[in-house]
Length: 46
Image (cartoon, rainbow, N blue to C red; front, side):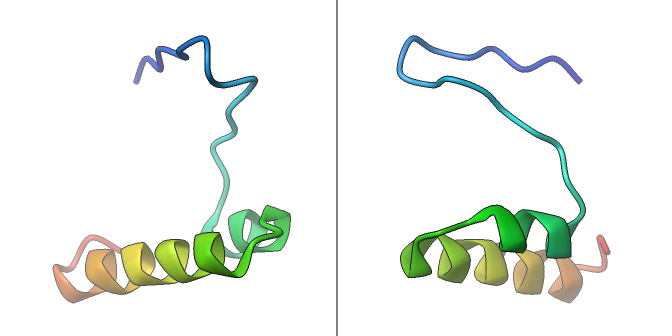
């Protein structure tokens, strides 16, 4: 998979769910990631 970074972004990482959660510092971002994980689980993609 190719990732195109815009001028607004400094870097990206591909991480496992738990590692990604531990990298986040804002509660809203953690909520978004948790919702994404729940959605992926609900459609059988995890």
